[in-house]
Length: 214
Length: 192
Image 1 (spheres, rainbow over the protein chains, first blue to last red):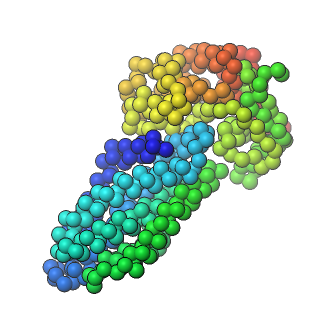
Image 2: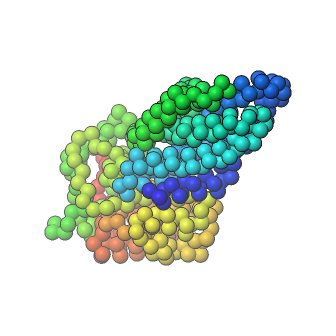
Image 3: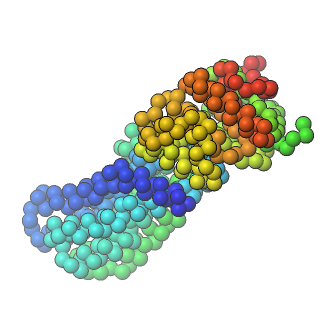
């Protein structure tokens, strides 16, 4: 298991693509004030939501290289021949995907918040929200990656599949970090959705990998 | 046959893509055996190997697989960006084996430091076979093992197979080429 996670992390890190979601996230945060103008109250009101949308898209960016290359190269088959369950493979991929995008994203949220002129306690709420919500985003990405492995032009399809499923995370994530003040209820709901997706992902993705084989 | 059974097919029927590839197939492979599966393209050779490896489920019948198996098909399952040695060692560590044995057996040591993505077709095939040879599984499943191999590669494959069988291992190979395997049983699919 540890070996699988380590391999995934090395693949993500070595390809230089690990930085891509990060750059993407910062780019959105930098471009947004240009688009709507430097109106501080407006930025404060919308900034959290924008950063959540950016986080969602950043999680989705590597969706094509999460499962499909391993299916095409026979990696998944070889692991199965050795008796390693598809669920364990999916769990390893989930953990590695989260590790490769969430902590860097949370660090990038600091300059991003500065770019949007978000106050300090707002940033704090955003970081807590990201910590709770990103595992759910990672789980969703793994499920979609496994479902679309082996299909053509998965990028667009993955986006179409993921966005509606990610809406609850977006709603409660943005609500938990809203400028009106802390909202423990939204944070709890965000945690509930995130936990549910993390618990579901290994089984859903594992089953998808098995079905793709026949 | 007194030797231990490494693989048994009992009345196995294989359905793929809505088509029955073979029906009511009985098969028994014991220690030291070699079985060459032949037949036209699409006759179900690869499917038979994937059934034996547990990657496909039979429509009917049961498959008994008491010993660990190793599969070498057209996909090398080696990480493109790693060197050949590092990619083989990933699997050797999971198998609890020594990657060096496979590298030596297939004559890959001169290119062991080359990234997998730069290897030629024949070199990839050698690497795929090296993964199985090093793995230490009792039953080897080869899908077109001779594809892309040169004369030296074939000789090395023959030697490795002979060593494996004398050590109590067995082999099932699907191929439409003549394989350098002595005293092998043969099974022809799709002849009916």
